[in-house]
Length: 69
Image (cartoon, rainbow, N blue to C red; front, side):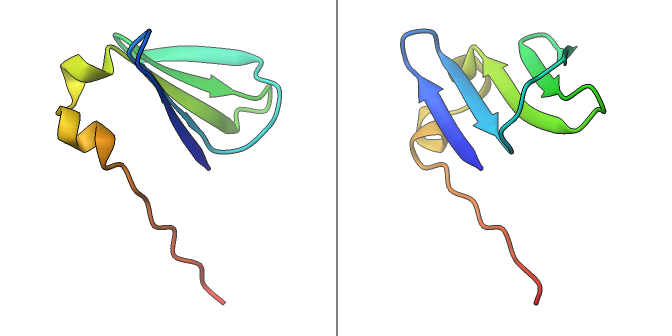
């Protein structure tokens, strides 16, 4: 997974897996999900991030994915 933030356009992109998107759906204003043709989630794009999140939250994004053996 990769999380990027573009200050110039105030957009965050969360990429879960590589691939070619076939479908994108805006699930709420400014929140777009990219899907493969078989509806696997590739990425989520969030527009106007600074209106939706505190600056401190954007700067301190981290994640933990627990893996089971």
